[in-house]
Image (cartoon, rainbow, N blue to C red):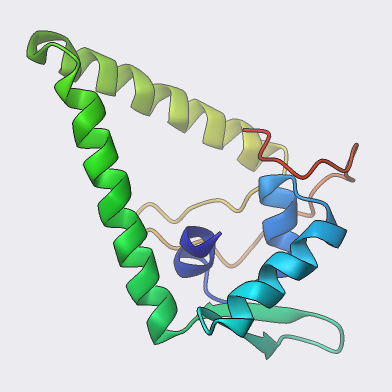
Length: 138
């Protein structure tokens, strides 16, 4: 969730819930915990919504998480023969792009501005939730 907030400053709690397929009732305590430990802050967007932004501590934590992810990926790559890594990574990147484009078309996630890596300001309305699951579906 920190990575989403860092990449999309001002994103709302409900947008994150739609992106990760987390029920609204489960999002509220997650966001409250992150705010309580000062990793994120809420800023009013309109009368009912609050945009989420990273604090300095949140950026620091996101960097730590990023380092842990990169270390884990390096460990996984070490188990793949060097001659096959390039093809595997190309296939995984293609799969990720296809998955993202599908979800962009469905209106579940924001289109990404490929030049800056930040979310585009326009977002189509997400389809209504079909089920309330508290796990990441993708």
